[in-house]
Length: 454
Image (cartoon, rainbow, N blue to C red; front, side, top):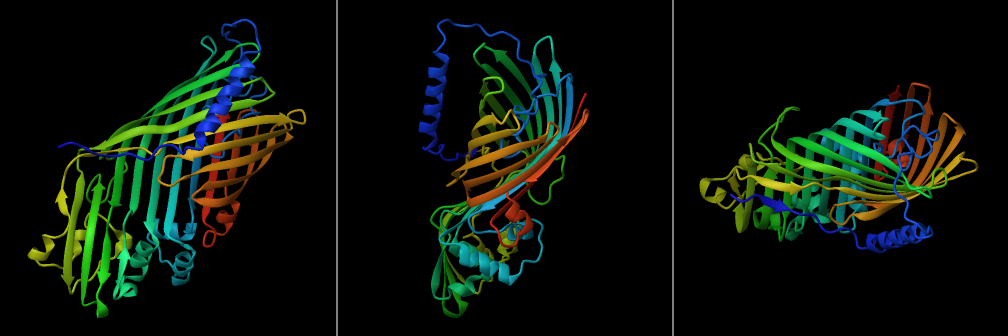
C-alpha cells in the first residue's frame, strides 16, 4: 500500500517580501568593504557578553541563541515550555478535554458565543534535558538533547463545536455542517544532536547551527473531513449523514511512553549575523520533519450518504479508534460506516520559522528585540512580538513582551532570569493574562529553564 501523505499549506506570503528586504539589507551592508575577508576563528562561545542575546525568542528555542558564560566549556539545562492559543477556546476548556475533567456549561456557552464561524486551537509542550560542550580547538559547540513533545491542533466549524457539546437536538429539523474539520495529536520523544559554529569576518560575525533529531512517536491521531453534514429530523426520529472522512491513528488503545508506534526525523537550522555588541539578526527553522506509521496503524475512511433511524450519537468529546465500534447498529447499517483498515500512513511535521532582530541600548542594560514567528498550520497567522530585556544587574534580568498573531489576538508576557557562577534559571510566560485567567482568556503559556555551566 502507498502511504497516505498530508501536506500543510505553504508559508504565509507576507514573509516573502520581509525576507527579501532583510537579505538585501545584509548584502548592502556587506558590500561596504572593498576586499573579500576570509572567515577567521576568533569569535567564540566564551565571549564576555554571553548573556546579552540569550533572550532573542519568545519561547525557549534557546540552543542556538544562547552562549556560554566566560570560562565555561560545558553546559547542562532542564527546560519546561508549554503554550496554547485560540481564537475562541480558553485554556480551561482545552485542559478539560485533554485531562478529561468536567467542563461547566457556563464555559461551553461562553466559547460558543465567542466562535464566529470557525474554532481554531493549537498547543505545544516541550520539556527535556540538553547537554552542550564547547570545543576550543574547533571553536564549535556540540549538543545532545532529549525532549518529550506534545502538539495538538484543531480547526472546526461552529456547528461542529455545537454538535459535540450540545448534541444533535440543537439541530432538530436542521443540518449541521461538519466540512473541513481538522484535528491532529502528536505525542513523541525527540533525540537530537547538533553543532553550532561562529565565524568572524571583521566588520560582522556569523554563526551557523544545524541539528538532526530522531522522533519516536508513541501516540498520534488525525481526523480530516471534506464535504460532511448531519441532518436531524423532527423529534430526532432519523438522521441523514453525508460524510467524506479520514481518520488515522498510530495504534489502537492506550500507548506506553516508550512504544515505537511511529518513527520519523526532523531538522533544526540556524543562521545568525551580528556586529559584536551592536546588534544581532537571527533566522531559525525548527522541527522541519516527517513521520511514518507502519507498525500498528488503524484507519477509518469513507465517502457515503447514509440514512439512520433510531441511532444515538456517541460521546464525541472522547473520539478514538473505538468510537465507530460503540454504535448500536445492525450489520446492514454498519456497512455504511467508514471502512476500517490497517494501512501505513505518513505526515509532515508542523515546523516553525522565526526571524528576530535584537539591539542593545543604554550601555547594554536594555536589549530591545522584535521578531516574526510562523508555524506551518492551517490558517495560522504570522505571530509578531516585541520584547524588552532590562539588566537590573549583570546577573539579573527582567523582561516584558507583547505579541499578536497565531490563532489569538494579543499576548502580554513577562520573564525573570537570574544567574550565579555555576547556576542560572529563567521563568516566565508569553501570555500572563491567560496564565492567571485560564477560564476566560484565549491563550496561555509558561516556561522554566534551569541550567548549570562549568
